[in-house]
Amino acid sequence: MKNNFNKYIVLLAGLAVSIMLYSLKTDSEVVPDADNAGLKLLDGFGALKVAETAAKARHLVVTPQGDIYVKLARPNKEGKSILVFHEAPNGKAELKTSFGNYGGTEVYLKNGYLYASSNTEVFRYKVNDKNEVISPDQPEKLITGLKAGRQHETKSFTLDNDGNIYVNIGAWFNSCQEKDRGLHSPGIPGCPILDSMGGVWQFKADKLNQTYGDGVRYATGLRNMVGMDWNQEVNQLFVMQHGRDNLNSSWPELYTSKQSAELPAECLYALKKGDNAGWPYMYYDQLQHKKIQAPEYGGDGKKEADTKFIDPAAAYPGHMAPNALLFYTGNQFPAKYKNGAFIAFHGSWNRAPEPQAGYFVVFQPFKNGKPDGNWEVFADGFSGSPEKTAAGRADHRPCGLAQGADGSLYVTDDSKGTIYRIIYTKKQ
Image (cartoon, rainbow, N blue to C red):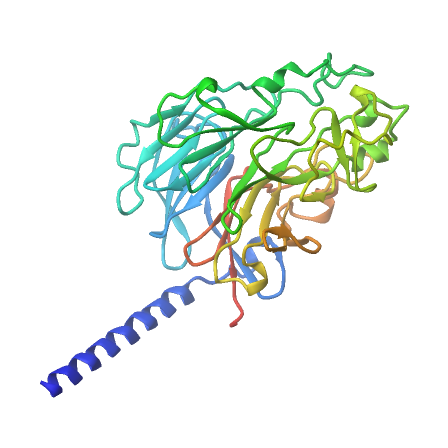
């Protein structure tokens, strides 16, 4: 009996060693490209190109089984808008399947469903125990009838842990003017579109065919938020707002072209139900560190806004277009990254006469659920060169972020459609 027990223990130990060695072998097969996929990274990190979608790849999600769901801004030449890639042990991926016939930005996996959005609706698909969509041609329609215009039309969203989904409904105005972006055009009194746009709406994640009447305007005064994530550490919604434009071209007597290139900040907001971030009545000036009343509503570049509007959790340089927000919960990267935020800046188009900026992924340290310390550029070089960045002619533009099961960071590019994977290569 004792000998059999000892043999059993030896067999278990051998099996454990085999599993560990297999795991190490699998991890070791994922190595950076020789040129780090053309990216400039912090010391200790490497990158590889996982796949090429040849389309405008927006947000993405990575399953524990190695499948990558990628949402396209519009259907590809085959008429499909959700691509599914499967990774080989070396980290490179091949197209597995595709489905969906609607453009959009968001894709999200939670509690047995894959969620995806068009610019006016949100859908869900049941997945099996391998996180594969069961009926790709039969999505369930969760939310319908959301407003969309010629700008800020994408419907990003995220989910909490209590069965709710939070949807960005961006405003189709720059600053709610009578003539959008017009010279000296005043703001529309009361900005009536705020009843259905310019904020975050909360819906149920399991109720079909919801419309505005089924939802709750969770937070308002937010121009457009492509990057959203639920902070698991503090159980709270965080969003990245795209700040307004055209300070100089609409109000040249109040703002120089340089001020207009730098202002206002792109802001990170920590939201609670009922919050008002102040758009279009104010903007956040990251140089003065103040909330400033918008010129369309009586501001002069110095007059401070009403204190009822919430302060941002953090502020970043203007016009860099934050298109993804991800709280890092993995263990692959060094400890300082745990529960901090990665932000993908899509890059500016309107910082002239200053150089254009962005086209990179930054890291914002957090402590106890709040930004703590200065942000830093984590991954750069997407544009191809400093000259291409300055001119706004980027080869690649970061758009989506996802965390792999092993703690890798994935980044999409919606210019040429590349999918990148960033790994930590130093032993900790």
